Image (cartoon, rainbow, N blue to C red; front, side, top):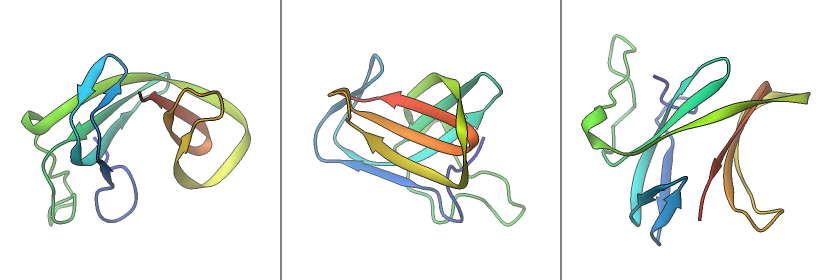
Amino acid sequence: VWRTGANEATTFETNKDLKVGQDSLPAGKYTLWTIPNDSTWNVMFNSKQYAWGVDMEMKPMRKPRFDVVNIEVPVQKIDTSVEQFTIGFDNSTDNLSLTMAWDNTKIVVPLK
């Protein structure tokens, strides 16, 4: 499991309830965690806030019982290499998504 981002665990905050895939994500603040694999990534929105994201032995501090949403999304291979890990939002087709890209890999998490 990866505390998705650099240094501290990345936080995700919404002031409205969202649908993440088929799951409901209530308004609130979450930490973002992922398990990257070759063909899919698991993306977890965890309701617990962690001081750093990893402990002194560099082990993830995530407690799975606080996962509110756990979604598996396919990996997309992209032609352009992304130097820095990038998290963004895409609403170019009126379908909001949370995107993550690094090197030649991109994932898309559907949001409504």
